[in-house]
Length: 143
Image (cartoon, rainbow, N blue to C red; front, side, top):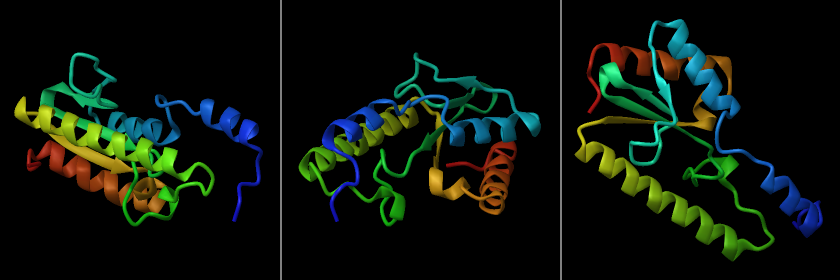
């Protein structure tokens, strides 16, 4: 199936997507704050400028969009039919960069949590996922 938008329109749409202050990030931050955790956002001094940094717990959280970070097995990570080689290369480069930054953070003894967009889409999923993460953070049982 071809794209319903022209190449120019699709390019315009994609260029307006922001990497910061996304709805999933905001939902996670609100949940953490409401449960007593204080954090910093996008700390540039750490590898990968993590979305959320919890200094007290030496923990960082990346809230990943399923499409942009190539979430394996997720329907939201399906690539567009047009310009497929471009998107494959772009997503692969993002995944490689993610692995490198996570590895660098772990070498610095930071605990790393990745949350996928699809894991927090519905309130039920979000409450379960974030409840588990909150428990792990507060009880220092992250690896």
